Amino acid sequence: MQEPIHKKIGKNLQEIRKSRGLSLDQVSDMSGVSKGMLGQIERGESNPTISVLWKIVNGLRISFATLMEESTPSVSIVKIEDITPLVEEEGAYRTFPIFPFEQDKGFEVYSVEVDPGCSHVSEAHYDGVEEFIMVIDGVLHVSLGGDEYVLEPKTTMRFTADQVHTYTNRTDRTIRYMTLLHYPSANR
Image (cartoon, rainbow, N blue to C red; front, top):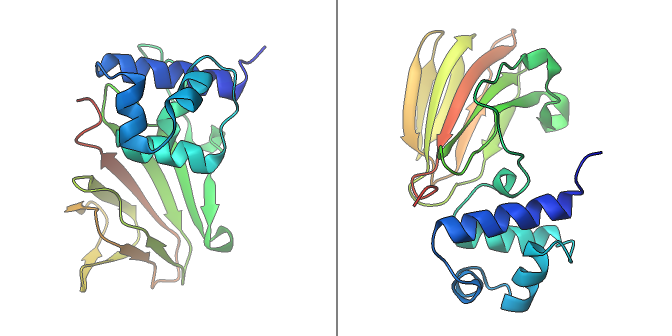
């Protein structure tokens, strides 16, 4: 039987806090969530709202998925077709979380598909987050800081993702690319 999500969140929060040598008071100051609520979450006594979780992840400067992940084996083989994608733009922009965020690694990897004519705006990530892109199929247009970059197959791009950025497919074919998000403060 799978562990309830609120218990998994509590265990992960406690592990992250302790690995950083932080007290509940310190995490409370960082996140704006009360010490009592944090304690209840860690003990699995409370099922926190999404807004509370966002306060915690922003305060700790971690990804949202970090609080919900399970421990990972030493070898992991992933088939993209077995992953349920995160879908936006009415299904025209699909993100497959190949390697979700792990605290000790500090990054997450996605395979992304963008249908013809689709444009997806990605909100700014927190300061210092870097994004690495490698186009597999198609021609991807990336708008960033008022500039547009055209990425063809086997072309890579690296940028600081602390500003709004847009991915656009101006072709008549689906584009596929890989993206890695690196969180520099994740394992501090």
